[in-house]
Length: 622
Image 1 (cartoon, rainbow, N blue to C red):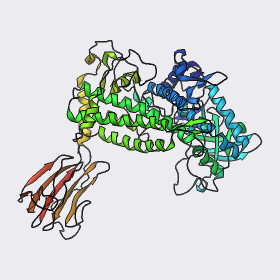
Image 2 (cartoon, rainbow, N blue to C red; image 1 turned 120 degrees about the horizontal axis):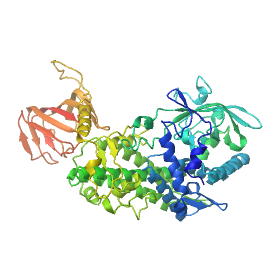
Image 3 (tube, rainbow, N blue to C red; image 1 turned 90 degrees about the vertical axis):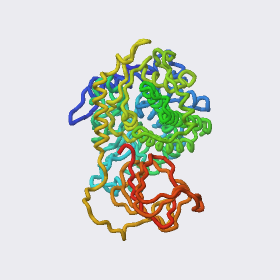
């Protein structure tokens, strides 16, 4: 196994990288990548440390190897490997989604499905078998490129104007195949040892040229990496931006300029069906995404701890709405942990290997995508609902304080670090943390990877220097004046959000057209939108409408929605609070007004002689 020194030395191999139009020499010293390289090196040092040998390594029969390459044969071995993955993820708080354990899980999954490759082509199966052992024993860091460049989406790869826009086989001979074209997206490729190249997207007959699967070193002649702009480069000091300055894995488009791939590195060539089978007829897809769920569980613990620490520093942990939100975060994090445990417990034997349950895994993937979108929305708006169960869970969140570890470089084991506050300290390796978190920070954190690589500056998040016990936290925080300036900028940004209404001077409304029955209302109630509109799924927008009741029409149940509502009774009569039969309630005359916050129950409503209402709806903040 390798340590940091050996890993960093291996990156000085003459690889070809371009960023911002310029060639990169040594990635270990380049200002756009050096912190990332150092972060990756720390993973190898951690795994190679004698004190972590039992946690991070396993016996292969010919020596010890990193557990990221382990092929579990039982439930117990699967859980043991998961603890190693958690330990690694804790070193980067789950932010490096393509750290070495991800593609190692992919290659290991392929190997566990070796029989599928043998049925396809024994020679290609032999190449895969040899490569797995080679990568495992050399302790390699692999990235992968498994999707095609975006072009004319109405056409397949073979139908594009340039047949080699997408990387494909341009020649083959006794020595191997020659590849020309581009593939994406090599996350972490600038600091990886090798790259696994294939296609996970469905292909059609006639696209055999692009149906390939192979692995080559990053310094292979003719292989060029075209890097996107670096967040690390823009982050400035690690102290100011501890996440984006260290854990930006970067992404690259790889261009294969007639790259020669020897046959002993080729696992599939010219078979469209086999390109799909390698992922879904073997444990590959399940095993690599199981690793992703383990990493996500660590990340959610970190974010939950961060949220609680922020609330604690602002003295708002006992506010009901804050307790509710903290409880919600804790419950969602617990759900992900439970799903990981469930996919392990429901795992099954595939030949000699024990594989996580694919159904639970795919359920978890769907739910966590929704969860991450919800957390993004939670972070950018206040919530008015209060759930006692969620609040109860929130009461259990506490920071570890002086009881936490002085320096935690070992696994975030459940027995040691069960509480999110401790996870926060362990992930960032500090006894005490000074945290400054503006309202947009968690949103920016979530945007980094889980919301499709959205740009994150994380400039609103400041993790303090290591502090002695009893130190004054205020001494380590930025001057309040600068904080006030940043809060003012945030307020101005919110105040300047565009309102989706056009400029209209006084004009006569056409009251005979444009009426429709709103969703969830009976036929005798109609609306006419006179300005703007609401995007209820993304919780944004403003809307002004007229709402009219026909005589005798009533609703039967209260309403509740996630936007503010202002209502003015223009004419007619309106009864509020009738029962399901339209009886009872309190009657209101014209020129009466109501203003309701999100989630406030209101209604049912009835009008005896008919009425006309003017309503304004908007989300918070406007």
